[in-house]
Image (cartoon, rainbow, N blue to C red):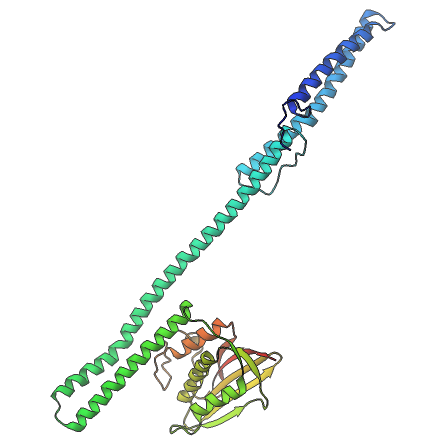
Length: 358
């Protein structure tokens, strides 16, 4: 409560003035009364002195109650604030300057606490921004290094065949050299396009656009395009799919990228005449996909590395760009979906799970 009226009897100053005047009156009245007692002067004086002692003790108790205790509480609260501890508010609630000062201290404590919390949030955000910039710089350097490394081979091939094309007079060889140059150029173009797509996904420049569709029919379409009636289909295709539609809500084009990369990866690493099996199973509100190919297992220490950019397993029969599984991991991670790879008896299985919708 703010004390604006200087004549308010609840102020400390007025309390002390009123108390001092009242005590003076009590002393005078008590002395007069003790002097009129039917006893000797010495005894009446001793009685008055005893009364004065009791009065002083009572005054001390009142002073401790109304002045010393509030001052002690205010001092304790101020010390806590000085140590940046705002968990103990001042509990003085009197309707005087002490109560007003306690309210001001509590308000200041609350404001300081909010200011420190805002400052802490700002510092945390600043640290996150700094860490993000550091991470982006590292990723940019890594991207440039990897891209430079990946470009050396096709550029070297293109230069060699271009030089050969200049000196070659045989039309058949010139045609062959031209085809090699075009193929290597397309390879570089595909690598750059894939890398830019992955970078856009990682940086949030590309957003997902979910839609509801039947995942069973979708998988049959993608698998049919990639596995059925192909000239290099030297494997035993097996599948286990639900016989009824199962709907999901996700980005259809991005999930097609996921299936393309996983199925093509299995197709390129399956043993000649080996089993390539597609599986789609329902479990509660989830749809579990897996693709298994018979072939050499992935070394245990490399299972977590295959999702990183430009990683290639030395035991793999196919040497691609090293970006396909990185794109799979990024798309599935953006949707917080569970995914992974595991060695199974006789081969390797890649899998992921996606929630179903009605």
